[in-house]
Length: 112
Length: 114
Image (cartoon, rainbow over all chains, first blue to last red):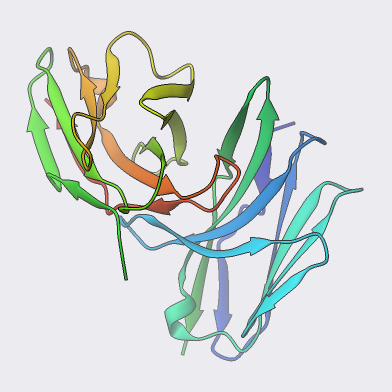
């Protein structure tokens, strides 16, 4: 099982649609979880952290399920500007340090 | 809004040459990182740096790589003898609390080894 695995995508949705991405992780001791977005040939940009209780930021909702070892990102009322690759990031303790792993990303295209 | 900056934006070098990629992390951040992303592939962790020393490194970060914080603002990645497979986008990132916290990425340096 890959350390961090995401829906392969691509997702092509119309404007206004709701879309959900899932991400699974293999290390049950993982501690911190994030969603980043990455535009083509640009740097990853932090979208939101994922908290145990779930959290919402405008049209974006992130949830964590520790028992099943997955996190999700829900985008409501999608906009053209939401088109990007969404990266799931998991931080796990390794010996005395932390190990940050990126998923391969899920590409989203929002069409008019 | 403070941001991480990187120079150059694009570096072309011949195989076997040394390159130094430069980063200026966000000023009050204490933890620094380098990542690479080969075209079409996922972002891969290279190294983390705190308190003037490497705190963690990946299998990719072999003896050809080194990092340095030569002064209070710059954070550099040196590749001693570049190989074709070092061609990638290199991202610097910084965070203000521990490697378990949110990291902010610079715009990257595209390294092309010919």
